Image (tube, helix red, strand yellow):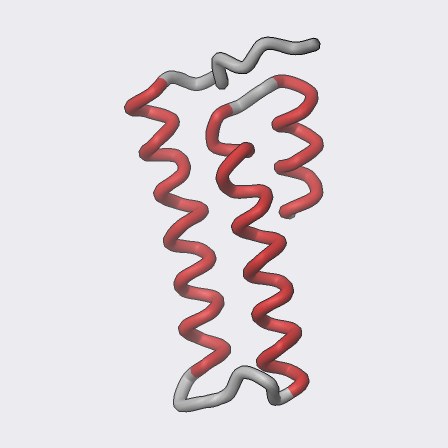
Length: 75
């Protein structure tokens, strides 16, 4: 999903994709670290997944506040 969001951000400039794409990548890396035992603790995987999904969901709220498309000029 992170790769799809980043590609969509580059293609159509949806604002939430600029936020959600990297967040989903970081969430995937964090889940990998939990699987390797580097990040551990009570409910570590659940916290990583819930945090990632919460920030990705908040990116839609940011899009509602600032507009659907990013105002970044293409070169």
